[in-house]
Length: 144
Image 1 (cartoon, rainbow, N blue to C red):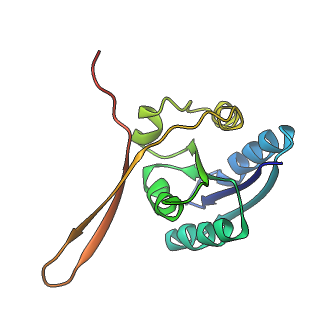
Image 2 (image 1 turned 180 degrees about the vertical axis):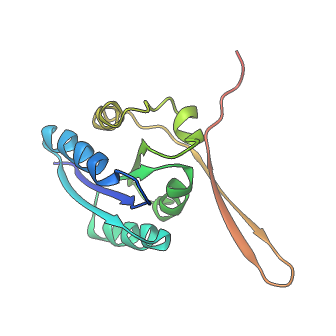
Image 3 (image 1 turned 135 degrees about the vertical axis):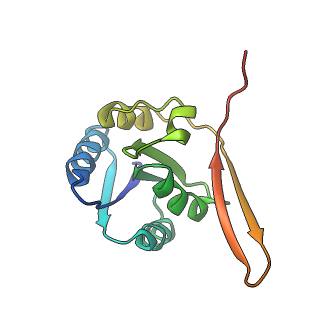
């Protein structure tokens, strides 16, 4: 049985719990075991994801935009845990480049289909007065 961890961040005026419930139901309909959480703080996305990976989840499903994906993706680097994206952000550049449908139910069914793709995850460190690091997750396409 596939074990999924669905995570999202509550935003002002957002209906994230409704989307999380829709995704949860779609995954459960495919006989997946689903744990889920909606957090208030951005840093909790990373903390809760690390905990889920340590507990042995197979897939982390982030409900959010590019910023939320970047909070979660580094925690999955060098693991066999898959990343599922339910695009609910403003730009959703990564989801768009991966041709993930904007409808939550359609995106969840795409995750259940099990098609995996590798994406690039890079880290840039800038040194100066103090060192800072930034992560990027990218999937681009080349013109045909």
